[in-house]
Length: 341
Ligand code: TXA
Ligand code: MG
View 1 (cartoon, rainbow, N blue to C red):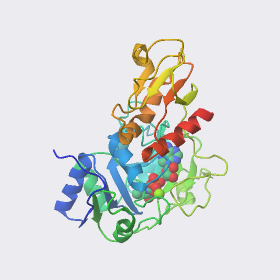
View 2 (cartoon, protein in one colour):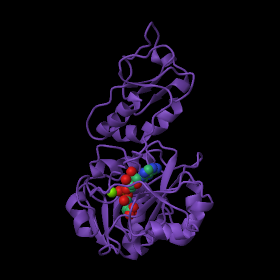
View 3 (cartoon, protein in one colour):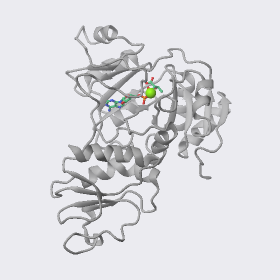
View 4 (cartoon, rainbow, N blue to C red):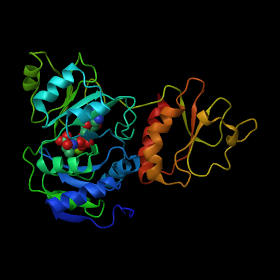
């Protein structure tokens, strides 16, 4: 198998049996493919492969790790990754496949990369209706993380021409199949608390349709009207960010007794204050985001390793300095936030 070189040549092809197979192959090998859904074009990567998911953030030039929507072929796949409670099943039966995204409790045993959920214990899932997207999902037999296929801060892409204008040169393939039917991103409903469904983003499926489906139950709204669908900023409840329950100490140049170490790259010169080497830290108190200093690898490990080091016996998690370029910017943004709580 040859290694995919993301960001070199972007192949633009119209959807056909052969190109769909090729797209599935690129995705299976960790590459990035822009492809149509019924709402907008999505920028897809294998949701089980952290490095591939990290590639999405890099290609989008997004300085923040916001959680992504994971697309699956059907409700059965959804149940592998999320708790499909009664409310979720009713909504799924009625609106899937289609433009409804549900935020659901993430199953702890789910093998999705933690970067998809940005460390949160919830996951956004959607079963898309578009035939090309469905053909790719079924061909690769993988869950696909896919935010809208536009560079950060640019127009949402509803045609292959718009995708090409901002993402060409950053991804492996654009699978072109005309303009999107809906032309607006999916409705997002947070049903992580089954008893309190909240609409976080309005879209083609309306709150009254949702309410009807749930026997007239009142569905709260927590949206504001941002032009850029990339960020959810809700007046009452800002997008939740993951932070470990023990303190995070950033830009650490040594480790204090009792702390765990989240290293980056070479940690030869890190010591334990008062004497000792980081080599003597127990396995449960030491992780290295990337021994070779690869920022994409580090990003793919960030949330998983923070979770693993988040143990009550640690007084804090000391994090080594991470270069503030490429995905390092998004990592530093998250770590800074976590260090302030
Ligand atoms: O129509 C769509 O939904 C398109 C197509 C490609 O499916 N996708 C899309 O994805 O719009 P994206 O990543 O651009 O928007 C996903 C939104 C983000 O604002 C993110 O913050 C929110 O969903 N989100 C994802 N997971 C979340 C979670 N666990 N909790 C709260 N918000 C979440
Ligand atoms: Mg978006």
